[in-house]
Amino acid sequence: MSSLKGWKDLPLATTVPASTSEEVQTGQWRSMRPVWNEAECIHCLQCWVQCPDNSIKASPEGKMTGIEYFFCKGCGICAAVCPKKAIDMRPESEFIEQ
Amino acid sequence: MSRKDITSGNWAVAEAMRQINPDVVAAYPITPSTDIPMRFSEFVADGLVDTNLVTVESEHSAISACLAASVSGARVMTASSANGVALMHEIFPIAASYRAPIVFGLVNRSLGAPINIHCDHSDSMAERDSGWIHIYCEDGQEVYDTMIMGVRIAEHKDVLLPVFVCQDGFITSHCFEPVEFMEDDEVQAFIGERDPLFPLLDIDNPVAYGSLALTDYYFEIKRQQVEAMKHVERVYKEVAQEFAKKTGRDYPVVDTYRTDDADHIIVIMSSAAGAAKDTVDSLRERGHKVGCMRIRLFRPFPAAAIVDALKDARSIAVLDRAASLGAPAPLFTEIKGALYDAGIHIPTNTYVYGLGGRDFFPHNAEEAFMDLINNKMSPEERYLGLRE
Image (cartoon, rainbow over all chains, first blue to last red; front, side, top):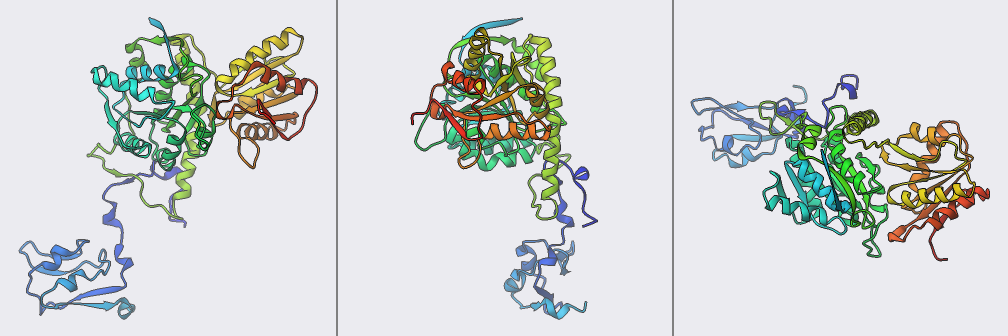
């Protein structure tokens, strides 16, 4: 609680600066984690197109480079649309140690 | 310069709106406030204002459109009554929380059922905890003046709250009486430009309104609204003082009539104060030291000013034009609380009158005064003008 602001320090009118979603770790909501198998990937980028949270990382050259777990909610759309089954959905419990 | 004309409470609101020339008006007609958007729509059609008039399909949409426009930075006004006000209820606390300084012509009418188009205060009293400023007016002149002052009070940087400017349905809204109008440029000079705090249309400084705030921040945001309310009375007085200098018309937060040496005081709101004041005069002629206090600012509740006017009375009658079914009437509760906090115990009777537009006559006011004079005091709710 101590890190939360008091009423005198909050902006008025329920406002927050826009673009704050960039700071919100929606990845905390995830119960299933997509794991990318780079060897199988053909870089078709269907996962990048379909991801609702901009969590598929891609290079300017159009190559998939990984998954942004800070935002990824684990919805599994990427795994479902992957034509090469190159993304596995795994329970977060397997990654507790990390 | 000013001009005088014969007009109604509703037309006085519409005329104030024409002179204020708000950016957006979103409204849905309901008796007895219909005249306001109807007459204003003529001003729009005739090109007399620059307002974007949004004709919506319900009161809920009207206030929603008003809120969106207001947080975008626009100066916004609307009007409604009774069940229309009730349909807007969901959005009222949101407008207050978003600190949207909407100026609202509220024409008091009884909430159904039974269906009734006449005046009582059940509609606005049901909104007394919605976070809006409430000002109750006695006549058309006061309604006109308060709409103009309301813009300044609502938009003040220390306040930023929406305001209800209440008048009694039909009694004030449809009664034609002389009203003195300011010149258009005087009104414009008085209200100035709105300087919004976080306008959504300011794309260089983007903000989001109405984010989720659960156990972490909701409480703090409500506390900010409490703080804003604490500034209202000071700002109100500054604006009223400036208005009085320009027009000669002075509007204190409570209107006291012959209360200075009064033993017995009636506390009342809005148009019925006229009959109460007449009764004060006639009873004074018969040797009774009586007075009348009319509450103009109801939210925030000006407890200190009220206590100051009542503190030397021997007995008080609080007259409510709304019942709080199953509990003491709203104004009575507030008056008692204010006196208790001041450590003053004055016997106080509670009366409900005028529900559903039941006329309030001088003899009704006299009945309450005679109870005080004859020391017929008790905490039980009494009713004026009701058939047993």
